[in-house]
Length: 113
Image (cartoon, rainbow, N blue to C red; front, top):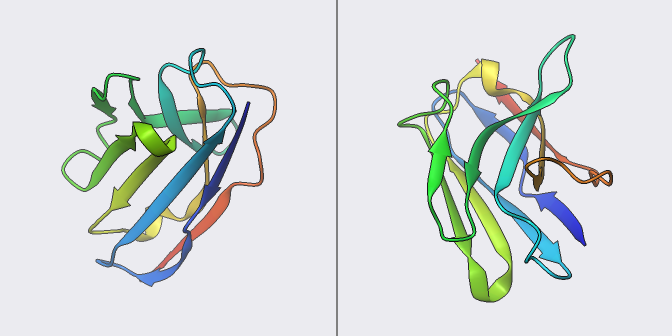
């Protein structure tokens, strides 16, 4: 199974981006799927996740701004990010929770002030 994130870019504060996570292979063992960010001095941590049944779970830092969704037929998980802040700048990865060994390349999100 492989997960590949895409959709990052450069945006001004207050702007929006939509990230996509394409899952290749069987998804039966991937529950839930999370989006991860690199916490300085720590390992990557999930800040939002979605179960195979579509139930989302948001970290406090993104509640009300980000929306995670899952298109089961296409094995794609989306992350709609609105009201972006400079502190959202990071490399974003998608992976299962707990994560698989292969993280993929991630996608860079840069929010300018």
